[in-house]
Length: 80
Image (cartoon, rainbow, N blue to C red):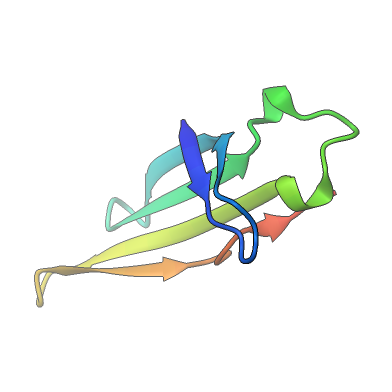
């Protein structure tokens, strides 16, 4: 997948990423994880600020008929 990043005080960047989505909590929630750049494109010299992970959890509230989204790694976790 392609992601657009809008870093503060820098021009917009277009990057490749992985996105994994699955049902969790016995089907009551959806978890997603993104990895930028995709693991297959990473090299030892990938810049630290461009080497990120992020995740969120979406839980459906049956009483209110709405979803609650919780970013678990808001903005991503820099790795490297």
